[in-house]
Image 1 (cartoon, helix red, strand yellow):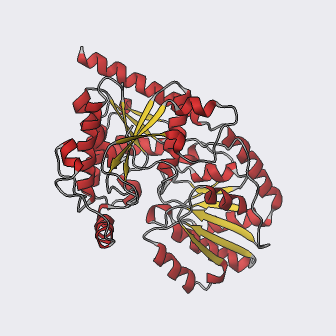
Image 2: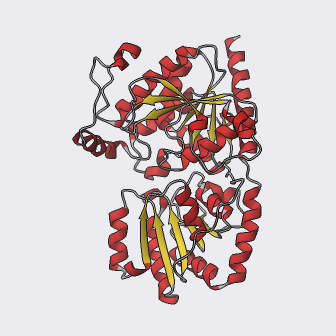
Image 3: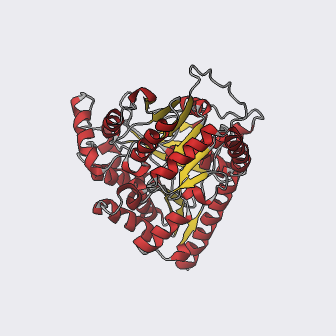
Length: 435
């Protein structure tokens, strides 16, 4: 399995999904070797190494001893790379410049990478070089693990070339997972290079897994992938076996939270506009925007112009236990995404007994009945939904309790069982083609 982030080092939802997915696959008797680029700078990343997954710190610890059995089925290969998730190829250029200014080491042509993989180990000056670099490493990994795996699974466009390279070297079937398309990230102004990689990856794959029917339709209609090769498997959410104590609230005001990347795709500006309308009707409400992204400065300026800065709190990027605490402190969670292939964060909020408002343009809307759904652009409806949940306790309580019951049934074990079926189908088709 090729990914580009995994807890505790995550920047978004894909790492969380991969964690639940790999554990679910292990419970379904699937052995997983997870290949992930490593770019933290403070660790020696010059050589291939396998790291036991039991070293990964997480609050989701089983009390029945089953975690040890699960983790025996998952191993990790950390690949040295400067690949960065959740940024565009255009943004990567400035990231790369900052990286060089920081004085961190860039690998020379005499580095161990060249000796091991016979290609230049320099960090790419652009994201496409890193994607190509990852593909070259993937080919070597597939060669090193010859005979030890049955299927290749690649997550999103950054790893699609890696998946293709591994397939060419090994002859094993390829399954690609589409968590977000370029149309989700950029609207109609797609980056043609990224689109080309997505197109190549899905057409080279034996099966494509889409995280929602919304995404499946985009894959079929925008990328021309045959419908019989595209399977929808909705994401799920994990519950902690031991609940943590609810943090003490320092304010009496109601708290409405946005948690996610502050980018066009997530609709943060609609959240701000709706917040201003709510505050005209109810002054004792606080709004939290937890996250970071390229629209941060734009959103801060808009909050200031609307005169609601004293009611707005920007936390920056949250991870791990801080995310859980933020949900526990919230009275309402809002995800007004312009285009959201799935969206795990509403499930995490519902798990914390928080009522949620989501956009109709999100894949998670397909599996939730007890979430208020509005069009992302309908700021009036969004404001009305926020107002209703903070002013009418019975309504809020109903959505919270029904939502918790609903989300409890969305288990990664079930999603993983469907993914295993996809693997088996891809393997059978691959064997038929060889005959």
